[in-house]
Image (cartoon, rainbow, N blue to C red):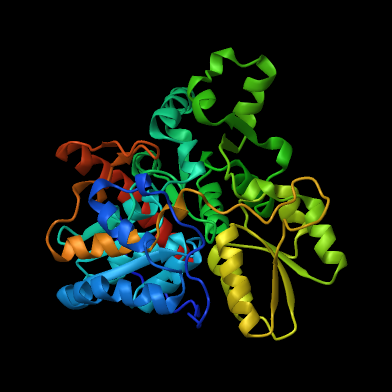
Length: 445
């Protein structure tokens, strides 16, 4: 396995807390919290408002002592898609806000950090844990924070398809696992000598995979797969779409029609059929509406291909955020991605004289809305952050919030399945191969 050498770090996002700006977009019901978290949630819900001058002193009473306790051995992390309160607060307390690629690198880039506390989704925290050293711990503020893409590509869904394809194509099969998958699925990529990819490096990773002259099984998502295939010169009609979710688990090659089996055999890329529930809200007519009004349209490549093709630019959350933060005063941007991201971008862009709108905010158009926020990621909020930091400082961090490679958490019940030690070592060995290859290919490109 190649060694990991990186110099990547998450720079400041530029997000600012300003007076009279609410820092919580919603309050979760008390019964959504783990029992250990409920006392903190009760205090938070009893606060008279959600303005910084009210929330911050309450948080400081818990967070500052925890930061003093851990010192530089602690790092707070959040994803750009988090609700406005978390991305602002994590940076306020010295943490980092980044996309999924940069988050995955933090344990490697910062060996001096021993405790990572992540406010994002479980697969992101697990990727950090896979790359972490033995003396580094990863904790998540809410283990039930998940992702629709990953929920439609669970290991027990993907593995039967993997077995079908591996039996038919043998060593010719190469798995590319999108970052939005569990460590168990990433391990399948490593087992085949494949790689992980993110939206920021998918084009480079697919180019590397095509150079291997092997059949690519891209898991998930179908829209990113279609977009990166198009960017790579692969005709759309040469792709094979494998069903996602439970349907994908049940699909057997023997049940396909002869014509479908022939398409499967000829396909350079097989796309697992899951998708992001957030990004499928966008339509080409949304792009046209804002373009006619002088807006530059930028979208995430998890959007359907016809939306990406119509937009002026497409890229990862880091790309989108950088485009907003470097826009000149007077520019107008329509952004097609997760709703919390767009709200955060709109607030910050306004301070620089830039107008940002949600691409889906189109009157009287099919699929129009203010844009869907990631409902499972927004399960992280100030009480979760306060509670986990205070309990960790006291040495009472709940075991459910500790993230180990191979952990699978039910997003509804919170039930967790944890691998035995030997199984976990085997998973780490394979998943680390795939993550390491992603890093090396990305750095080389």
